[in-house]
Image (cartoon, rainbow, N blue to C red):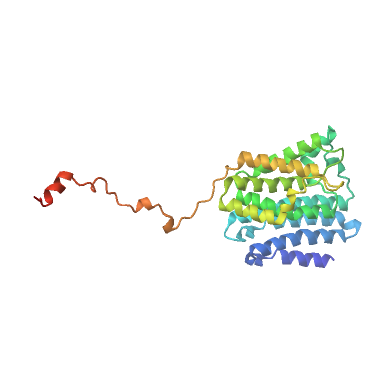
Length: 294
């Protein structure tokens, strides 16, 4: 197993990765996170601590590769994917530590109207109840967070902070008495921000992002309502509400992309010749030139 792990690292972090395209880089990144995680879980208890720190090191090395910005010519796209991968990797590091060391992270959850549970406004989105739970949120975070940074590079951090804090406050005040955990509220907030902001902006970039996001996660418009007892629909609802508020506040913070105009769309006034008063003819002059009839 040790030999497999070393071979895997050599292949993953080879210099030939400069030749990878954006899609292959994303696949390689996800493969790094998940395969390393499962390699760790297969080890005996005596080697868990050593391999856990190796997992952290491998993740950090993945995120700081110098050729990461060579994925494509579009640096904003590469950065958006990079930041999303960092966020997802952080969540998986925390979940792997919880499983490997038998940690009880329930104290990080959000308990409504509990002074001790108010800490969960910040920490609850970092904790997940199961591997299935975190797996379901992984791709939503990767895609929606990448869309947020790519489409709104100036206001993305404001939107994320408002959705994070406001959704937590709403759950702490109005939600059922339970321990609410998971990043689903964040993903719903990002989706509704992209959706509402595109309605107001109506530029090609935001509309295209919204259409792709709606195609993938349009079901979030229904998951804000009660469905199953074990799912915190309150987090979904207040996350969506926070996303709408953020869209109303910062929908115009980022400049709209320049609209390409074709030659046939140019203003016709540019080609018009100014005639002025030259078309007017003096009536007396016109009458003198005409022959007189008796």
